[in-house]
Image 1 (cartoon, helix red, strand yellow):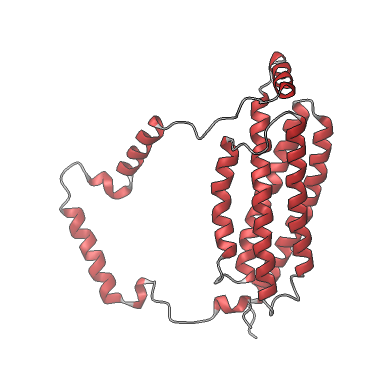
Image 2: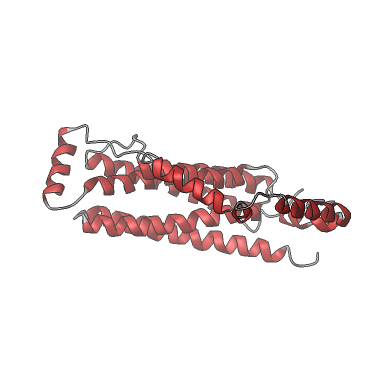
Amino acid sequence: MRNSTDATRLGINRTGLQMSPEHAQEMLEGTQLLEMDMPAGTSDEADGQALSAMRQEYIAMADPLGSVPAPATLKGAAKSGAKMLTGRRPQVFIDKLSERLAFERGGTRLYDAVYAKALASKGDISKVPAEELLEIRNSEARHALLIKECMETLGADPTAQTPCADLVGVESAGLLQAVSDPRTTLAQTLHAALAAELIDNEGWEDLMTMAREMGHDDMANRFKQALDEEAVHLTKVRNWYTLLTMETSELM
């Protein structure tokens, strides 16, 4: 049965230049000839300056990633108006709440995949208890419900895709793809989960601070509890990842 040591076995890997020195030299010589044939004034293309200039043009013309919807309820409109009268921008807080909701939903799906990988990795399952992974998964789901309740309390729509929620969806897609890949070992899967936990802890810290600044101390207290739970997740995932990674360096 496969375990994390499978990812470090010696095998036929032909991706490096050293596997074919003759072809490598031909490629390097071809690159040099192309650079010599470049018209005068275009040498900056080789170091990426032309690409950077093009990207800047696109950035200057691009529309924003999205927008925060106006409150659709009288309660939401009243609360937003009251905050604006005090010089606050409640839409920023709503955007960050939506971001957290999107990330926690993604975290739930992420740990669904981590849990499945753990069950399939019989050689590692004794070191990474599947039931603890399931507990983390359920905690992420509870956190998503917490954010949903807070948004509804403010009269905001938790189903709306705000700019930060959109961004998080794209960011999370790569992590979920890595975890869901059947070729990745449990150790590699935990590496992706560790990245997610680091982002998650930072996000709750920022959200808690913003809630207090907006005068929502009750929400901030609930966010602090979620942050404490995420800190436990981070410690567990880091320890599991370190254990499996260090173990693969030992001769069996």
